[in-house]
Amino acid sequence: MRKIQRLFWRPDRVEHILKRHEVTPEEVEEALFDDSRGLLLKVGSAERNPEETVYRYLGRTAGGRYLFVALIYTGHGEALPLTARDMDGAERRRYSR
Image (cartoon, rainbow, N blue to C red; front, top):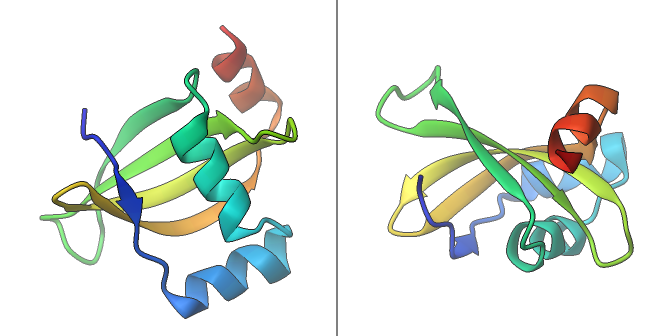
C-alpha cells in the first residue's frame, strides 16, 4: 500500500467538493493524515492514465465527520484528491470494523 504524505489540490477539485459535498480541503487532510484508523483501499488503474492508481480512503475528521475520499496516487508520496463526501452506511460499517 502506498504511503501518502501530501495532497496536491487542483482548484476545480476544491470547488467540486466544497459546492457539491460541503467538504473542505482541511477536513480531507484531517481525515487522511490524523485518523490512525483510516482505511486506504486500492480501486485500480485510472481511466485516463492507466499508469496512475485510484484509491478510496475512509476516515474521520477531528470533529467526528466520517469521510469517503477518492484520490489518485501520483507518486513520491503525493496524491490528487478527486472527490470527498460523507460516507454512506456501508462505508461506515466497513470503517467501523
